[in-house]
Length: 304
View 1: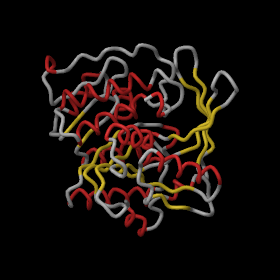
View 2: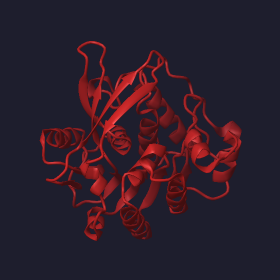
View 3: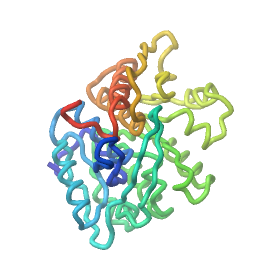
């Protein structure tokens, strides 16, 4: 499948997710912001091989199990490289009564941190209708690797791919806040489909209000834009206020781990299906509302 053009190519880090399940103590899964988006987009699209994931993993049982799970989701794993000297990252997550999360990470030696470590890595990035990544994808890389990735994205964009990006700002992953601002602004400059969250943008760029964030993004043209505002639903500067659909709240909030990631997956799947902006917003919000009702980043297929 990896020789064909994909509808969506997602780039980033996947980790083994160890979560408290309230019954037997812990449950094991695999997650990571860009991978979560890839899984939910693949489920919505429903065509094996339409979505591909580019990452690096180790040569150990957890990495092998991840590759099998991704393939079982219908994701093309032909872009997953094996690094025999490193391993897949690991994190644990527990949630409180309101669905808010507490994380612990073991990822400093993650194989994904060597993405784009050498120039040849960019050869793994094939053309796709949409190439998706996040601020976390960039944060785990060295400055030189970030530059290679951005240059590769510019090349693919020139060849016809649309770039989709979520700033997903996590300060602890960046060497400095100024490096994060510089890199993420460079990404916004080459992005076609913007999927930011208000809170991340305010924290990173110092916007004093939600409206300031919206006004900043309204200052240029986007093929698609959804500014996420949690359970209040997204806003798009492409639409008049009255043209936004209703965003019903989730029936129950059990775990907010992949709320934004699943929104992105639903939005991008709707974009690829040729839906209009309002329908994309509604599709992303509806999917996120379903996902936060279940524990873990990726809900079981039987419950999807």
